[in-house]
Image (cartoon, rainbow, N blue to C red; front, top):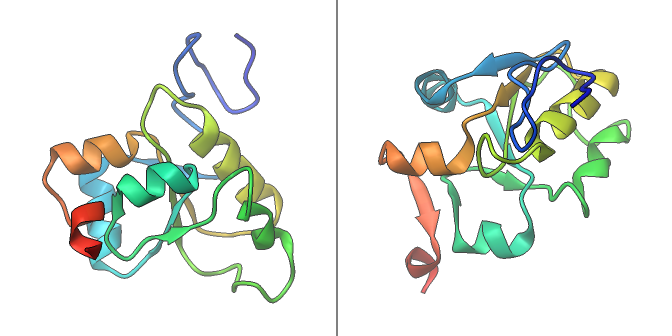
Length: 130
């Protein structure tokens, strides 16, 4: 499988995205504690099932392109981009786009939401909203 961002196995996301910093779950947790902006690129349906506490939903196929527009967000803001996990390539592609669009501190959280959930880190679940 040819990939623009690094090595990948078919069915698996690349380990690195050129211009972004790949972070594991512990590193993502530290960035969360420091106030980095988390961007969830999954579908609205997946987001509604549960997401990282404090994250913003910018679905890759829907609203993620807002990051392209000047003035939407300061391009120096640290952003942590995540999807479901290592079995999907969307977070890698979104991280690549953020770097391409001039964001200076892009963190590619490759392990994604299900790893965050497995570590019992702060989430908002559908039952929390009822």
